[in-house]
Length: 356
Image 1 (cartoon, rainbow, N blue to C red):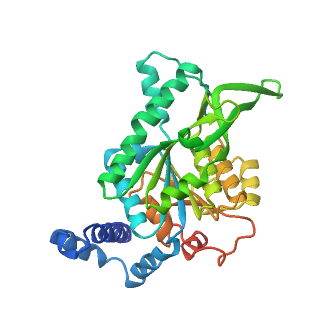
Image 2: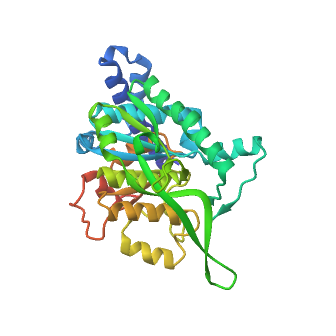
Image 3: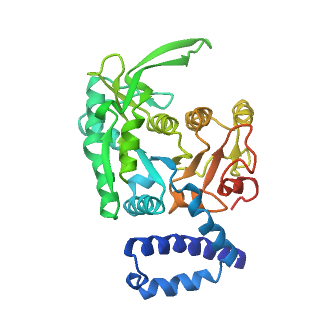
């Protein structure tokens, strides 16, 4: 029982450490930090060692000047307190010299609006079959509502953010996605998902221009058809984030989910996966269902040159900061087969040693 209490104190203490750094950078002076927060931090700080504080702080410079792409969705976006926490974390990253790029989802919100408008929905392998009416609603919800709310939240938290859709300045061009689906006979059928696309080009120059001006791009995954720019295509947010990360040569791609990460047969977190080990995990049925496309997105990003991709638990407060700047991480890290413990920033070595 005492060990569990100490573990909880360490978690709260490190969370308060991040919060304290945020307050310090936001105010520019310690005087604006309420005394209660100092006393509370001091109480919990007794449960974390100086070495742990040093390790957390030492990671802050590793991503300075580098780009991190975050796919934002699920609980982290639907819960008000979690959304505020996320916005504050983006501001903190920016003030630490990191270049965050946000690509957001919005499936539940689209589903709610379709239900209100009495437009039926159907899915194939987790992808929404999207007719003309559905893609119109998706564009309205993603670009007109969610996108602007996220950008405004980051700005309110003290940062600089600009809401974009993939159609702005041809930010994301896509081609129609034709899905292969296995029928009852075990044969593969080609299924047209409607106005659903797969990214084929990302306007990296536009994003670099914004990042050079210290502006956080917030991107809605709505694209133009590369063969017919007047046609709107809806793109899976994970896939869009992976394409953006590859185009920018990002140091890290983070996919926020509503699960802890990839779990083994005993429901323990698998801390690190490579392309080779992923094949075995899929064959054994460990990686299955909704986790399959997320792993494929991560693998594709790493193959395209992204240094590492992580599937992290968006339900955990400050999950982005924990993954980037702590020794214990916040999910499952996907790295190239040739990666070694010294190939990446030290915050990636955690996957080999700690399962906190």
